[in-house]
Image (tube, rainbow, N blue to C red):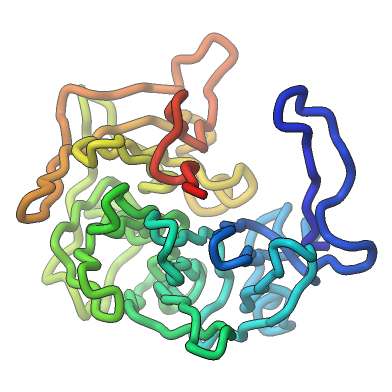
Amino acid sequence: MGGFVLLDGETFEVKGTWERPGGAAPLGYDFWYQPRHNVMISTEWAAPNVLRDGFNPADVEAGLYGSHLYVWDWQRHEIVQTLSLKDGLIPLEIRFLHNPDAAQGFVGCALSSTIQRFYKNEGGTWSVEKVIQVPPKKVKGWLLPEMPGLITDILLSLDDRFLYFSNWLHGDLRQYDISDPQRPRLTGQLFLGGSIVKGGPVQVLEDEELKSQPEPLVVKGKRVAGGPQMIQLSLDGKRLYITTSLYSAWDKQFYPDLIREGSVMLQVDVDTVKGGLKLNPNFLVDFGKEPLGPALAHELRYPGGDCSSDIWI
């Protein structure tokens, strides 16, 4: 069920559930709240028994993966609206704009590879619209005849100017200017591994975006397994950090080298004036060399708050 556990802010003692009894969403994953609008919005992935052993396309056909956003009354702790997402399978990471007065934000839908903008209407209800679509690639030598980008993480710069997201399967990291939130504009793209690299088992037959398959990524002598997954941005917006592991069962299915080699952390330098991304060739944290490794690094956090944890009230 998509419920929430409430912790004491100082002791981290479990106080109970946040939602009213019996009021959990059918499925749950991420959330973001905006007290000035008396709202919290949550996303959904799937039940643990669906996703824990890997991805099965039949589960999509059976309707076992999420495709909704849930709008909660922040004060009453109850769902007031359910938003059905068109082209929005597996809505994972959700981000309001950082401006505490803003009544809009974005959610990344992994399987359909779309970015959806949600926003508050004049009457107080909420709506959602697709603003970015990453086209699938027709391939040979893979699980399905078409490979989605699989958007697994998104974030917004602290000044609400840029949106970033990772296509874990295609292998690219993207930067969009969202000065006009309804019309994001691509300003940076960087391939950091992925499933379609040259010399791999996958052959791309048709590609709406690329003329050729990207080269494998080697940083400081190490060939990077997996693709860009969780991302975190420095508060000044100039350094973007990336890890390459999604979830061990899915890592094993799509990137078996990750299990053997361990994941890595990379750093990308960001042009915050014109937009643009450039890999730092001298930065590599190799979790394959951990004493009890190889390890699969996932979430990234700054100790004093960061672009995907800070919420201003």
